[in-house]
Length: 163
Image 1 (cartoon, helix red, strand yellow):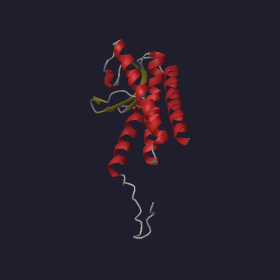
Image 2 (tube, one colour; image 1 turned 60 degrees about the vertical axis):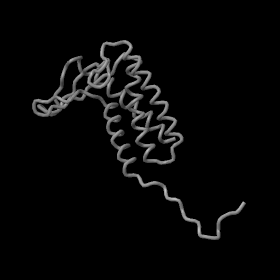
Image 3 (cartoon, helix red, strand yellow; image 1 turned 90 degrees about the vertical axis):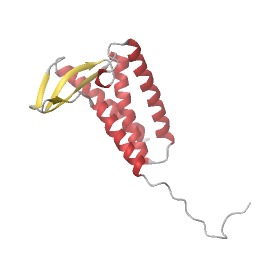
């Protein structure tokens, strides 16, 4: 049950931060947090990452459909998979997916607001849901790579149950 609470609270936190940005920062405005490095901005992205499929109605529908299906699969896996490390990764991944899905359905795209500059390079603007998706995907990959398989306990010879 705690896993579903993570999904709900994570998606709610994402929606809260997006609402806060939308209410406090004008569209296309920028507020320096660490001048020359980190800015809070207010951007709308009707596409996927890096505005892929932006301006295409079928792309918005496709993104919402894929996100819905992926979220349902993750919810099923959270409910049925036995490993808690996998569950926590999937819960945060699902929270991010649901957070962006709510925006896509409600607004037709997502609100992005975190902008980082590395010298002359400006990293693509993102939001809390995107952070949850990326960080939990990396964590999930690491868990899968380094998780030790469940060990079966050996049954001493002569103690096996016979039919």
